[in-house]
Length: 264
Image (cartoon, rainbow, N blue to C red; front, side, top):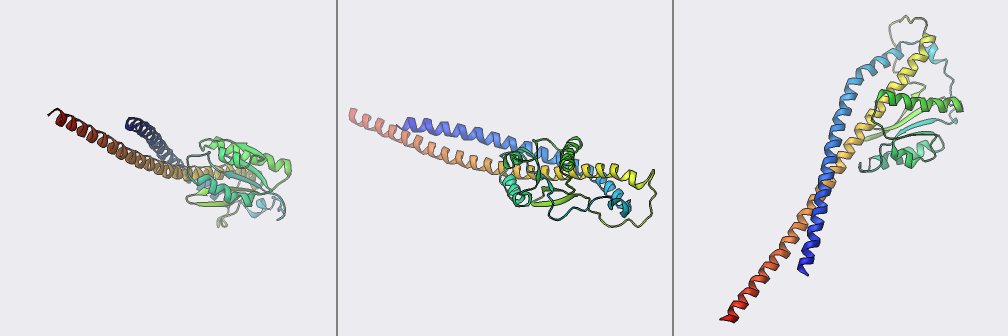
């Protein structure tokens, strides 16, 4: 019986050790992705600032070309929910935050967790590393909904650090007036649609990077916790294994000692 117990404990120690190695490796991968995401965001920030500055240069007449959507009209929500599993409460918390906001609206689901949570979303986009090309694809999905439904308002829901935010993407929110007159060629009205398209894609890319970074932070925390739990289980099982093994050795010594005394 003790041999069977030792065998079972040894099997559990082996399984827990393998789990610990896997979660530790996944933590290292998430750490690498986190650093890459931070570098991309830092390098992209200057370009995004230039794009924001450019939108401030345009006169109010350009923004007046956008139709004012009614408060009761449906909106498009781009939801960055991340990938399924292995990131703790990151995706569930964000999706629960998004649910009452996006209920009854047009949804562009970015990430497999969002796809699973919003299976009836108007556009389903899977897990991809943030990139300018993927931001363009996301924006095209939102734009196609606007064209099909004559919707004017597009919002994004994503995690920025530890905070979940709902941010207006279109029509763009002007961040103050530009105090210098700027000459735009061939004209502001011709330039505006081109700039608006580039600006929207830039903001989507930034939001995806912010969501990606937040997800990796959550995954690192989840994998670190899982690794520590596995290590605790290994420690407890090893202690149990040693107790049983020590008991077996003690019993063998007693048996041998009694046999020697009997021979005497």
